[in-house]
Each structure stands twice: as C-alpha cells, then as structure tokens.
Length: 253
Ligand SMILES: O=C[C@H](O)COP(=O)(O)O
Image 1 (tube, rainbow, N blue to C red):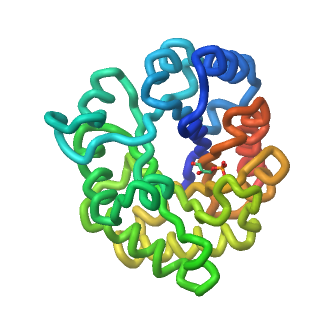
Image 2 (cartoon, rainbow, N blue to C red):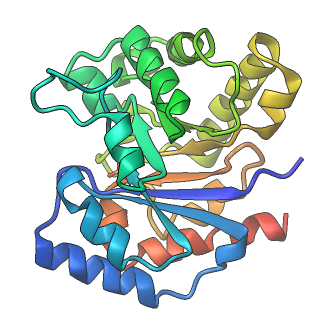
Image 3 (cartoon, rainbow, N blue to C red):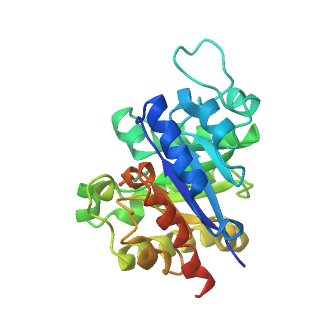
C-alpha cells in the first residue's frame, strides 16, 4: 500500500505581506517532483487568500487551526465552514503550541478533528511528547492517549494525516534521530492497527515534525514509517524546496 509522501510547511505566526509574496514566489519557481509528493503550505489566517490565489496550483493550502464546532458567537475564532467557503482544503489541528500554550486538551483536539473532517476539511493532526515526558520514557503513552482521543471520534481516516512532533525537537535545532523517529512512527502505526484497523494503519500517513531541514530530511525520509514532514522554521526559507525533494528517497526505497 503506497502512502503518498506529504510535506507541510507551517509558517506559524510569521510573515509580512511582502515576505509572504517572496516565499510564494520562491515556492512557485522551485523544481519539485510534484506528482510524487503532496505539498501543503500553512500561512497565518490573514494571508490565506493571498497565498491561495498566488501559489502554484500543484501545492495546497492549510489553515493552522479552526473552531471546534459550528461558528457563531465565538470572538476571535475561525470556523471550519469559513475555511471550506474560502476553498481552503486543509487544516492543522492539535499543534503542541496550541495544546501547551492555549491548554487544548486531547478531547478538545479530538472534537476539533472530528468536526473539521465532518465539514469536508482534510486534517493534519499533531501529536507529540514534551521533553520531560520523553526523558521519563512515556513517549508512547502520551502519543497513544492523544491519538486515542482522535480515534474515539473519527471512523474514516481517509482525510487525516498524523504528524508526530516531539515538543523537544520543535524549533530547538535538536532533531529526533532517524531511528528515534522511526521507532515512534512504527509504534504509532502498530497502535493504529490494534486500535482502529489494519487498513487505517497501512494507509494513514504519519509525518515527522521538529527541526527538519535540508540537511537532515533525506535520512529521515528514508525511514519506512516516515511518510513526510511538517516543517516549521525551514518552511520559510528556500531550503523548503530541498526538503520537498527528499520525497525522491521513497522512490528509490
Ligand atoms: O509544525 C511544525 C513544527 O512545529 C516544527 O517546527 P520546526 O521545524 O521549526 O522545528
């Protein structure tokens, strides 16, 4: 069963209009093996229309969050319906920066994932352990609990990509080794097989995020259970094109 390589660029809360135009122009000029890789660019909400209208058509756009249910009197929120209305196909949910800084619980993230999928959005759902949890050996326990909250609410995993992002590797320059990433991805796939179905386990893409750059992406991509990346800092730089090209490693695998 082939899982199409997936590379997401999460711009987080970065960029001015001028910078956004520059990054998009670099992306538009990049030579990438597009039929073999799904590329999804996730700018802040305010730049979604600009990026959507100027980005090359073979790359897709994602929001970085959406509200947990139908819109209404929820000041400051953006609903899944609004994203659909704007023609935004993807949304990132459960990023550790939201789980930890904004106290989004496993259940809340699970509810968001289920609602966004029900509205027709495709979801990149993030899971991952903190440094403390990593050092105490509870990585799988944490990641399984986060994934369980999603699995309890979602039956159809077709439009769901899981991003394993160890918090200790995010923005720190301290990337998980290929072996560490492979171990968690493989355990997570095993968990999916036992807790959902063999088909979901075989077809769901599990992508890695945390200090991915052009220098480490090929070795990470070579791991059998690493189906792509969610890239933060490096997605704002021209090297993002090189990271996308690491999809080539899968062809030769
Ligand atoms: O969503 C992306 C991750 O948080 C990784 O960020 P980073 O590549 O800057 O470490």
